[in-house]
Length: 201
Image (cartoon, rainbow, N blue to C red):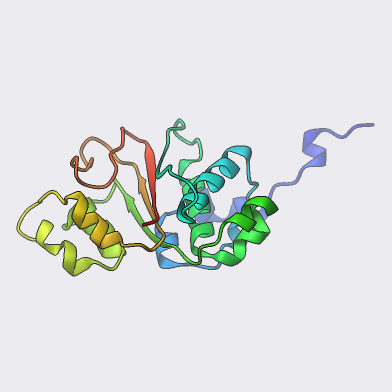
């Protein structure tokens, strides 16, 4: 006799963890480098959509793809934050790639550790979006003239100088019209979308 779903399945104990019940994982976990990513992937299933994102994003960071910007536009609760964290962990931790990625893709991803900057549109830092992103990339002094005396657009030449030739992943979450950057700032987004920019100079 076939078992019912209730009989055949068990809840993962982690769902009773208050921290997980908050609904989303904080992108700051990537910046703070909490753990090596193994725990995250041990409790998550890699879907076809995630695998597509991993393929395009990681090949771009390896210098093997021309697509540099990815915009995730799922409905609320559709997993945008989850996918960005997963990609960020793979970009940051090379040892995860052979464990998580299909063998053919893992063999083509040949960069080491990528730099990561993450910004949540719910925040409103004094140095604005562009100042926060540049600061996370280690260019706090270089970006300061563009916010210290009021907001000033950052041109393409300056962004190239700040990012340089290192593999770099920029994650933007909850970018609304109120927090949307100017035309010469990091990649624009529509309301409640989550764009990502991967750079390989």
